[in-house]
Every structure is written in C-alpha cells, then in structure tokens.
Image 1 (cartoon, rainbow, N blue to C red):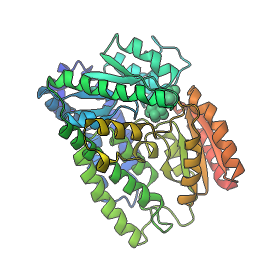
Image 2: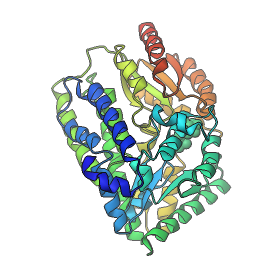
Image 3: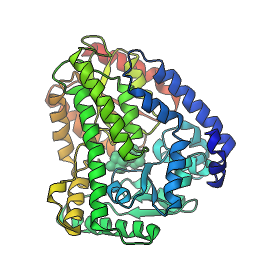
Image 4: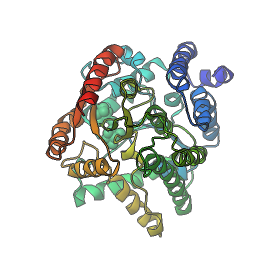
Length: 426
Ligand code: BJ8
C-alpha cells in the first residue's frame, strides 16, 4: 500500500486512516488465515492478493481508467459485470463488511438498517475504501428498501446510477429489466466515449462465464467430490469467493483453476483439512462482504465444516452461466443475460419459491448434516423469508439453525455457543 500512497492521495483516500485500517485488516487475515494448517499451496496467490487488495489491484484499476475504461463499484450481483468487462473495464464490490465505519455512517443513516449498507456508506464518508474512491460511478439497484433509499443520500458524496430491478418476474417486469440492461450498456459507452460492439460484449460474457465455471469447480471439489474429503477450509473458500468480486477476472480464473487442480489431487490422496466425520453444513442467506468471517470462524472453532454458502457471496453468484452458444446478435445477448440475471433467487422477489427448491436440492447433492440460515440484522427480506425456508426444511427433517447478526464482535461468543449446541444436536 505504501508504494501506492501517491495514487491513493490522488483518489482522495484518507491515507493515514486507510493505512491503519489496512494494517489491522491484514493482521486479522494473517492470524485467522495464514495460521491454518495443511493449507493448499496455491492459496499463496490469494494471500498475496490480500496483501495487495488496496494496493496493486487499485493501481491496476486506475491504469484502466487512464485508458478510458470503466471502473464500476457495485453492491449487488444484479450489476451485469459482463458488459463492464466487455468494455475492457473493471467491476468490483465495494468495501462493506467492516464494523469500523458504522459509527460514521450513523451520523447520516438510521441505526436500524442493515450493517452492510451502513458499513459501505461509512467507508465513503471516511474515504477509507480505495475501491469506492476509484469508481467512476457506483451502480446501485432497487432491491431492498434500505439500499434503494440510500442511493439518494450516497449520490451526494459520489456519483451513483441506479438500475431498476423489478420485485416480480412477470413478462412485463422482464421486459423492463431488459431495457435496463441496454441502458446499462449506454452508461458504459458514456465512459469509453465509443460504441460497445457485440463482439466486445460477447467476449465479456465469455470471460465472466469462465470465472463462474472455476467457482463452480471449487464448489464441486468442496462438497460434491464423490468422497467425504473436504480439501479446503471454509474460510479459505469463502475468502476466494469474496475476492472474485475484486480481482481481474482472467487472472483470478487462472489462479483458481490452479488451486482446483491441487484440490483434485488432494481428493485423490484422501487429504482432508477436517477430521473424519466432521459435520458438513451449508450456510443460507445474506452475503458475507469482506472481511466478514465471523460465522465461518465460529463454525470452524466449534468442530463443524461449512462446505457451501448459498448466499450472493457464494452459490447464488456463480450457479448460472450465460448461455453463450445461443448468442447470435446483440438482442439475443441481452436476452441471455436477462435469463441469467432473472434466475437469481434473491429474497427481494415475491414469490421466491425457486430458492426453496434449490436449497433442498443442494442439501441432497452435498450430503449435508445441517444448515445455518444466516441473516444480517434488519434485512427484512431474508429475515422474513427465513420462516418459509425453515418450514420447508423442517418438512424434510433437515436440521436448521437461524442466526441473525451484525458486524460487531460482541455476539461472537454467543454465536459460537449456539453453533456448538447445534452441532451436538445433529
Ligand atoms: S441479489 S441478496 S447482493 S440484493 S443490503 S438485501 S443484506 S438489507 S445484499 Fe443482496 Fe443483490 Fe439480493 Fe444478492 Fe438485505 Fe442488507 Fe438489503 Fe442486502
């Protein structure tokens, strides 16, 4: 980070405060991640990325900007990164997983809204996230009530554009959504100052599909590898998924495929990072923005293994690819993008029954022992949907624990106690 001080200053980052936060964050990473035993060797790349997360990667993004390529910050997997990547730019998730910015956010936002929103807003007020500072604009969406209204306030601090995501998936809703995708493309062209061609967009689809393939491969190796071997820890797998929203997609895909080659070998050699018969869990619910590792730490230190996250920093993000073989022209490209994005089963939709069917299927495919439904505090859509999901799980006799939490470290002990009791009961 020190090497990039000048760039950070130009971006308006509060360099001193930023450096302190980064130091603390990296220390936390070293303690929690690098101290794990029997880690795959290919995690070295991801460790390096963490050390450069607010350094070299920021320099790379700003190099793209110098060449008039878009740099777009997002808070949601509905932002069509294929179009940004097709335009030669970078799409990245903004900082929003730390409690350190929340007090500042609460000077402008109500206290009783989700910590993800408050944390991200606080990073902007503090100017301590170099991603936020590098964004040509932040692309918001109309998913939950709190985010939808926050864009109006955030726009006073940073340029924000908003994509209208419907809350139902009827034909008329999808028609509007497709128009939004075309408008999104136009917004990229405003930055590049040239038309985005069909071939460029198709190339963007190809690159992002390959990233998703690699993440799907990791998912299979973690939980559906034909044995009870779990070749990578839950924390490492979560961290990889978290940085899939930050890294250059081509480099990330290559490094993740290298890691998966190693994991394949570990499965063959019966090399598991967990003891035999460790309970296998899946986590359902809201996203885990970097560096939110609280639940994973609680489970791992209680003798359980998380083998899949159903959240948006997880399976919901990478489960579907864009059907590239069916893309013939720009219209069919937009249609296929729409098909992919409208398959996202976010709780902001009503009804959202495909999510329940998917969860039950995932449970069977991964031969699990239980699930944890995790929801960020004040996330109404996921909190309310928890009842529908747990009723369906109960009907199938699937053990479930529901946890609602924010980013503060205060309830970490209490969560651990509840996880331990849950693990004993299954
Ligand atoms: S597609 S889950 S990333 S909206 S911010 S809804 S936690 S109260 S993030 Fe999401 Fe897109 Fe849906 Fe996925 Fe709740 Fe917080 Fe809102 Fe949140």
